[in-house]
Length: 278
Image: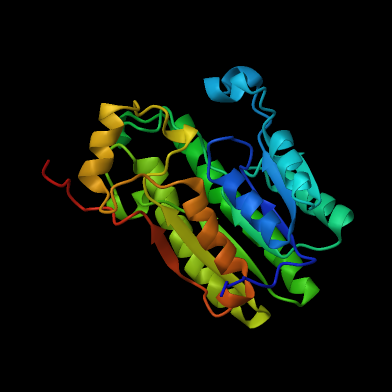
């Protein structure tokens, strides 16, 4: 006997930050498409010279490639280069989504600032770097949630917002002050908006991944360094995949997840607070 999630036919899902090949956003978009949604994909329009080697090798085209995959699943796809840190761009995105599809039902706030100069002690971080991370991660989540929740409320049929947070909000490790602060704030924003939007049947939840094998973590060398990290910290003995995150996101958007809201759900393979002795 199979268990099939329901509630997706005729629905439209918006997934931000969905253009990378090894990522969380792409599997989420494809999982929602397989479930029955039409998909709006956003990305920053990053230049090809910034693609990792595996993307260049297959002539990857960012959100355009993911849109092609969605269409191959028999669903409509709208790829849009958009900046979530700009309120004006977010409003323009909403207008385009409504013009194209006439509705929006699910929003997955997955876009995040790239790793880089923010992984330093707070006293050494530039104001520009701090603002860049805040504007993309926190402000972008707020702008998107604010605009799209209004539309969902106007439709009167409920909906779901999933904010992708991080285990970093729980670990609060040194050299993550900007990133972890945004994720702690996103967790709080999620709880507040869930309470505000509940009467409109709009559910708002956090999915917080642990160590997931994506190109975002390519600054951690694969091989012994990576394997030792996984063995030391993850109880289940493997890094997560984008699909691990996508499964939960899809469930939270489904009819079967309709009584879950205001939750911060960590998907981390049983991440240990201190490393296991080897």
